[in-house]
Length: 114
Length: 110
Image 1 (cartoon, chains in turn green, red):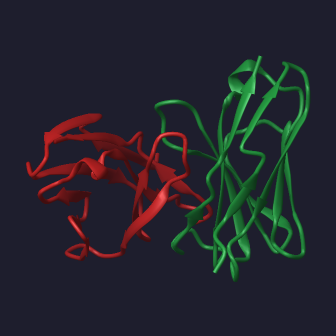
Image 2 (image 1 turned 45 degrees about the vertical axis):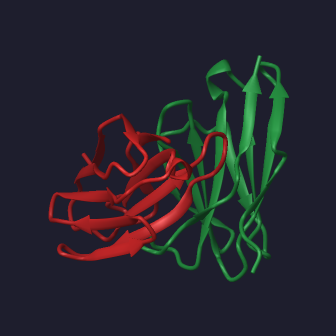
């Protein structure tokens, strides 16, 4: 069974640029969530995708957007990057829509904005 | 407002010195409490899910317990490889996301 994978591992961008992060969900999982984790903090929920539709969103501006594909893989896009966007971006997948399902995380993408 | 608070923020133990980590939560209608282990620069690793008060789960030197207002992660005779940040999380009211605490960073020295 393949776990959650993310790419790239690390990324350095300049303020104002755009970035796309990718995630492949664990086999059999149809729901993907994205989280942002700043240094020394717990992960913060960005949004969730279920059956290719966004069906939950945290307190993040519209320049954070995403997609889910028919194979349940997902992308996170961030436009107009700001210095505060520097963080570890985590993708998580689970077998059902509800957050009571066990959720498994990928290794993360470390984004640095200069 | 749904909230998760973990204490202490950091804990230093000697190898073999048992202790407990605390996770208190305020959420209506708890639909599960999750414990994760996170090593530096890596994604959280799932440990346990607890669904009802009185429930306990064990894995090697770790045991998680749940009451109506808090959960404890008991670490018995820890080893240096248990050093990590331990995160606690609960589903939000909408049931779409996990709300995380800031974590407890555990350091075990030999």
